[in-house]
Image 1: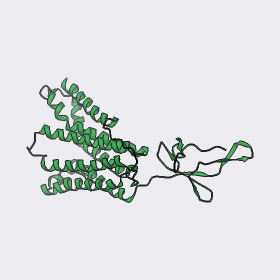
Image 2 (image 1 turned 135 degrees about the horizontal axis):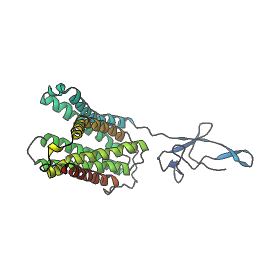
Image 3 (image 1 turned 90 degrees about the vertical axis):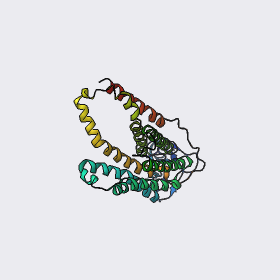
Image 4 (image 1 turned 45 degrees about the vertical axis):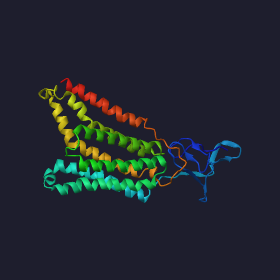
Length: 310
């Protein structure tokens, strides 16, 4: 007799150390179901059909991998969080295709539809995820998302368009918020067993936050070569590229944010099964935080040397 030692879902080794067997790669619990419908948490055994001839074997039981299904609270949180990104995407689409609609809005209407509603929507959605965190590390991340959104709300309400602080100081605060997004997202990744699809989308959140860091830090590299730059020498295709980016960049970015929010809220990290004994990972020294530093630095330097030498 031989035992099945590979996950039927991803093909990686299965652990049988304690409780139900689970796959160390995809994190899925594996149940073995007999012909009469009974479930077993023991390894599948292969029984020979030809007596002592072990080369021809048939399984006594077949294996079925349990698929993760988000709960209703996650879905509600995902809808609220995704709404915030969708509103900004719709705003930019309207601005490109129907600018007159945006221009006809009053200040109060603009503030309500494109400021208060999306930010409060995300805030409520993130708060719903706190009690659904699977361990302490993920719970810290969920609380961090709420705190960052509150900080963004206050900055938009009291700092944007006002002279309370120098523009450079406001940009530095946005840079710190960007690093906060990367850090708390990395906590979710490091303290959870995520599927490959969810891992990809949640990791993309770190990339988008790093782009925001680059955008917020543009005052550093712009001021360093603006005076030396001869705009009359800019190549013609640069104008076309800049026009394209200004038109479609924010649409694409906010569509990606919307999908990432949806995936984050409905991922395995917020399944609601709290593991108090989980040994949390809280170190900011990880590859996502490194990317958040290196990407804006290298890109800013590239802009400096490219445009500064024209």
